[in-house]
Image 1: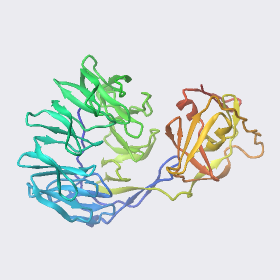
Image 2 (image 1 turned 120 degrees about the vertical axis):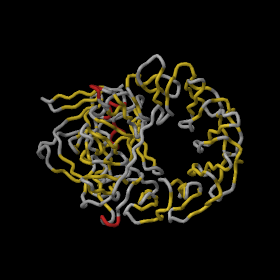
Image 3 (image 1 turned 135 degrees about the vertical axis):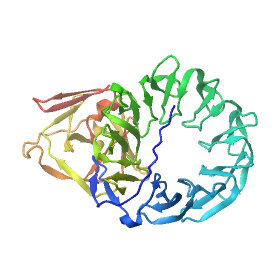
Length: 488
């Protein structure tokens, strides 16, 4: 599958500070941060990684922190990213090594090529032979291969002297024989391989999980799904780890899933028309974008037909307007944007747990789960119910203090006595009830992560999600102001 890259060739100048409050329960604020214009004049930038970003000046690369403070001097040949506290860099064309997050050079000048560390090991090359070193520079896997890729999930793809690919473990033992034309890193316990111009997937024992018969293009698995294209079909779709088609092959292009959503291209009316789908194939945003990229930190970078960039959230709401001439992905909560020839570093700032971040309103809506009435509140126009109340409606609610999560599962055999709900006739609907607070609690409905809100030690979630995650039916009666969820 073709990969799309964005090279940002920028002169960075900080614009005036501004705050953008992100929606729903996050309470997060996007702020322009950094130094003054004269201190941040660069020719190019890369994405942030581990709080640092490579920046270019006069043809050479260094790095800065999120405020624009210079960490490493402008002496390196190409952009770089940090992984495990180190970044692989090149100086004077053939002088390879690493710098740490203070800018100090380590393990320098020992190899003809050096790659970033992954799972404690890094690919290096000398005299056209590849192997692996640890962070202390010890060669733990000898330099005997014609090529090699980084470790992922305990395995690394290597190419032997016959130019065939297979996989080794961290001890250097060959686990999957070198018999393939190409191999990608493992992802989700499966690796994408190519043989005789066809693609397939193998598990970590070398057993073929998805055959090499019909896939003419494919990408690695991400969040349980992989984008593929069969030679008898004109579009891309998604399969699961059993090879079952989950989302029909009807898109002109498709990116891997990230944070539950994937960008796909319909290619309507002679344009690149991109939008987003969820894992059921449901289109969750309008298909209106010239370009669209994967979600990171809850936001996705998109470009409209006027070629202006901005960011949307997972509901498709444009939370940072498409007004920028260029933009990078949010990584580590940081991104670069350009407007009117001026540039900013944007930072997502998350409040402390318990910080008030929005209003809860009184509601005249009556909600029912399988015919039983349940108390509700209104936040951001959504009808919400208390997670802890669900234990009285045929659900098991389990708290895990270790990861601070609430897991909700339907229990059809559970006996329960629903709450007695008295209709509020005192307070006017839509008026202020109380504040909701920022929470770090993650709530799961039937294994699916959902937004949650905190009020007086209780956790609330969107009532409409029950029908979505339990294959149920949701109905609304405007005359009686009733919303009903019927789930199996």
